[in-house]
Image (cartoon, rainbow, N blue to C red; front, side):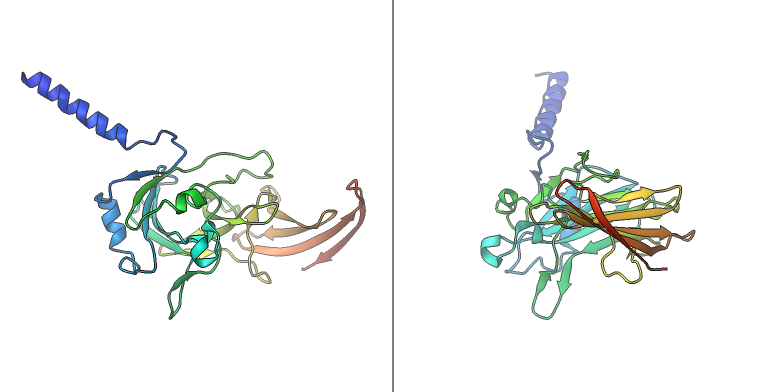
Length: 278
């Protein structure tokens, strides 16, 4: 066998190896070697690596956005063991900016004396939380997760309904904020979004005075020209409220007013009560 044939066979073997790691369906997560350097780096930052009570699954997303490479550790909790849904699993997300080499950590894990426990739902209803996947995860597994760019015509804004994270100028200051999605259950389950400022050293959750949990959802309307944000909350089949916020020049978000609507079965408005906050 001559040198050219050997070289060709080597290339063919490399190509076959690369293809074997690719999923048949590119929208699904696929398993990779746990010996990869990025997996080793995550293992060194896993406080639960040696815990017998938790399964640690290492993952990295297949997309780089705004110069951020995103990886993390998933602690899938089977519902039959803890009574939780799979999307209530714990997660540690590492946002590494490839341009500045800065890294930011976000987690939904509650550090108490007993153990690490999720205290609210993990990031939304995409591939990492479906029960058929969470049951298949084994301790030490490493996966590439698909970043879902599917859009939704039912949304009143341009946020991606199935993406775990995205970047969006939520306060009209010309700088994108980090938007983290999480699943909200119920018969009309959908994604809601928390907003984080990306500072030089940390992620700072965007808050509104007088509210404990301001965020976006698929109903959010952003009027950039007038610097107004409107969230719609349905409180019944024929009743809803519009919560309106004003964004000042510094990018701070303030409650402005809300309008409570009541309608008949044909959704004709019967009454509208307005309350101003400032």
